[in-house]
Image (cartoon, rainbow, N blue to C red; front, side):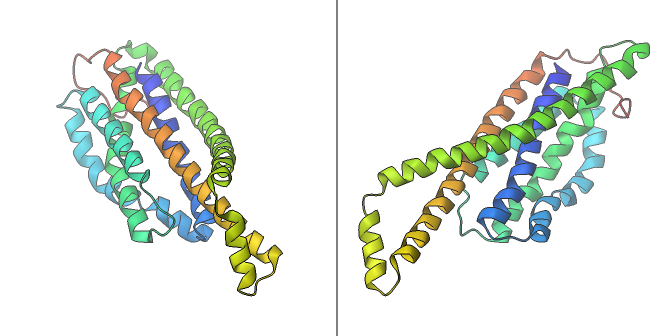
Length: 235
């Protein structure tokens, strides 16, 4: 259960790390460098939180720490559902900054919990299984989130076009203002495509939040360790 929780929760987290730079560059006009800044800053608070979480893992039920960390990641994903196309870099940065401590609450105790219920001679195998499942989950998550994002954008675009009653009138207004019909049509199409991608991004954040909420509860099916866990045993 600890290994499955590790794989699913890290896969869900990794999906956001794949999705956010793609969205920032394709929909928000960020360069690759600034998209990297927007995701990389989560390491700032993570560095300061790691020693505290490591010490707490020796005294508190690691399942509680892991569940709290996953719950925090789920709430941050819910926060992102409110993102808009005109948000600033700072508005983007705060959720990512707060991701760091919650991510460490998952990373630090989870490997120790994965090997806590096996004999010493089986710990290497247990750590290998958990790391394999995590790597497999990230591969699936990266492909699934991109496919889901593209498909959701297409569905949303069809829905927006069907609900847009004033489309022809808008084009005629732009033509009357001096634009060619081709230019007016292209401008309106770009607006619809941009909004459909924005909605698809929010859809994916919602899916990630649901996955994290599930894994936050799943960890409680893992047996409680009988003593302090070894947070370095899997490395």
